[in-house]
Each structure stands twice: as structure tokens, then as C-alpha cells.
Image 1 (spheres, rainbow, N blue to C red):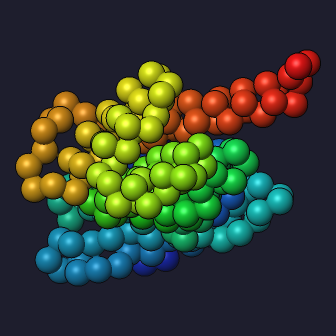
Image 2: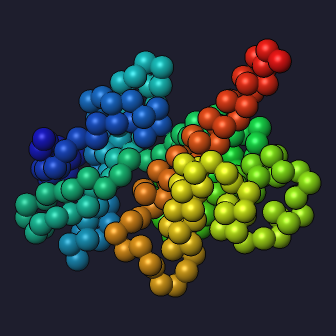
Length: 225
């Protein structure tokens, strides 16, 4: 929805939309506008618009800046929404079973997620691939502790094929490795799949590992024999 602002110098500007999510508390809303200002190189038509906004969530009520870029000529003063700052990173939820299996996975995965949230997609993909390796190897070590040195030193795909017996886990983990390798190699093999698909496959891998851990837990606890 377009909205018009009149600046202190009398100039009227139009924006393509008002910010509808607070970047700090991530709550949807229609914030209150406190102040609007043109910045940048006005003479060379490289103007930016910044709006000081107030979050209307009473549990937040913070001030933040929404930034807009010029889209048309100097005379129209139309601006398109770019981003609101400061952005607050919300760490993804990771199950207790996965964390207990691999604390390194938790740490690396959260760092990769934060990189992605800051539009550092190239680095995020590498981080997700590293997190996947720690998860798989730590899980395999937990079920085959006598093979720890072999698991640590072997290629990830070989570890999966040699030590993972659950077919669903094996299939999801292998495909996650394929896409993860694309994030680290010069040439991509899976052009129709991207970072989103890699994250889904990692989540599926986590789900099957969690299922395996919980199944064993309750079978052991409730074994009548």
C-alpha cells in the first residue's frame, strides 16, 4: 500500500509500502512514523529515504529505521522499501536429542543461519555443509564408538554408507551432502536446487536421527525382557 510523507523541507515523497514487521521483535504491525529524512546524493539522483519508526508492540516499543531506495526521477520522489534495521537474529530451534548428539552441529548451524539472515548466502551454504558433517559423524560415533577414528578420518559420504543403516536417514543425509558439496565447489551439479533445499534435507536428517534416538530410548526403557 502506497503512503505519502511530507518532509520538513516541504518535499512530498511516496513509498511503495509501510514496514509491516518490526525487525527487533519480528511482530507484524503498522508502526508509528516518528521522522522522515532524505539522505544520499540528491543532486545526482541517488537519494535514499530513511524513516524512524516506533514499534507498536508494547512488549518491544523500540525505535528502528526503515530504508528506501529511489525508483523514479527527482521530481516524483517515489521510493521502494529495502530493509528495516537493526535486524535481530532469531536462532533456529534444535531438538535436545540433536544437541546432545552433536553440540558442534548446534553451534555451526546457528552461525550459518545467522550468516544467511544477513544475506551472506555464499558463506551460509559452506556453514550448513560443515554442520551436516559434524552431525552425521557425531551421530555415527555415538552408535559405533569403537569406530571413532575411522569415522572421523573418512569422507562423509563413506561414513553415511558404511555406518548409517536406516534407509530414510541414509537417503536424506546423502542428498544433503550432494547439495552441501555444491555450496563449496566451483561448479554446481544440482542447478535446480538451492540453499532452501539443503536446509530442508538437513532438517529431515535431524528428524530421522531424533526419531532413531527416541525409538531406541523407549525400546530400552520399556523392554519387558
